[in-house]
Image (cartoon, rainbow, N blue to C red; front, side, top):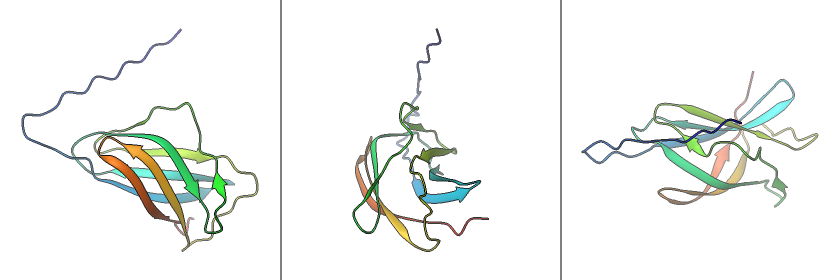
Amino acid sequence: MRLSIPIFAEPAAHTAPHVQWRIESGGGQSYLVAVNDGSRHQTIRDITLATADGGSLKIEANTSPYVLAGATRRWRIHMPNFRPMPGSSLRLTARADTGAIDQPVPVDAGP
């Protein structure tokens, strides 16, 4: 059995996460990517991605919800035959430490 317990030490001065989102594709897979260039971790839960036509995409479940400061986090999108159009966007909704997330996420052109 493996047990993982995250422990975060907060600095005396107020710091904030700054998470930027994008969709990447490569090797026949698509990923939701979060880049946190802020100075504090962000906890992301209940992630939902929606297509322009209102369809829902499944995101990799049962993974750590943390996007650490200065780190990049990727969640695999589990949809057979899903090939996002470069230049388009998907709608992201989720819960975070800082409140609700509801925003468009751009699809990168990829390799």
